[in-house]
Figure 1 (cartoon, rainbow, N blue to C red):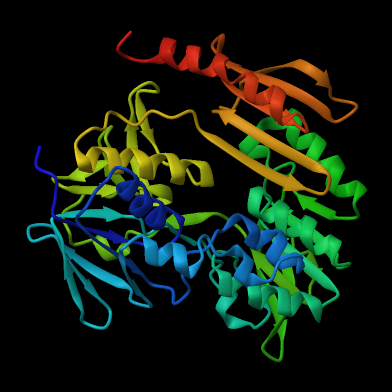
Figure 2 (figure 1 turned 180 degrees about the vertical axis):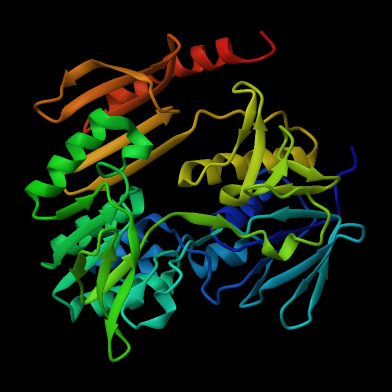
Length: 395
């Protein structure tokens, strides 16, 4: 394999930056260009719904690297330029301003964008939370508000609700699931999260779909549920999931299906790769395509792609991992928690809210969840490693 003379990374968030850093750690000496649509230097996203939104951190603290460390990468950062098309044959990316950037190898790291309600642009006071600017705008609105409604009961919506309660707002979570994060962690743990939010003063209007928004003089005033009930709101946050940023690739010829479809080496085409939230790659042990929206995957996948680019990489087959902090609860999830999995408590005590739960599907361990037991849940991770090997289609 010939190592490319230059690499263009499209996306300047954690996935893009980490790819560039991983290449340098692999002693890659070629040119690296990182193209990003935001004007901000690379920053971390998990603090946006917690430390930055609460005011515990100044926004600058979320920066992933200092200016000195970025300069030490010997990479060219082209910021504030949005990619709008890709010519696969020449590996050329065109930006909204008409600029063209080409390289011998491309890494697509454009991430995801927030889903929206059909009428959310009709009113001021309606927010999504994906970028640094989103977090800054939302915090400004929350500080002047009394009542917040969060549309969406997943990880992000739950974290925003917890942060807003710490700011003293009256908070309601609305969504079709029966409990916070029910789709991510199953009924046992989501039931505990329901109790946790209720104990901290959050109103839960769950199990009912959201029809739309109401407003007055151009400002949002409420969230309408199926059945006609309207939840009053000064501010609304829409946290109903995300869509991979692949719209600029529609005419590229790459396979797009809930992300950029890749092989087990995260390769979408010859010398074109995808990393992070936008990548949907074949996991050899699971025997299926996966797309993961979590911070840990960004780091591990970027390192894997850098290894492939320099010629010493193998298939990317990680143990998925994510975490969430809400109030005094710290949850760590290793592996996969499929719907309908059997759950048993292997350490700790559910009543004390300090435990490790093991998830089994068809008798095979697929996931481990720790509630305020990070060390113990991490030590149980080997059970998933063994199980994924058993699940591998090659066995």
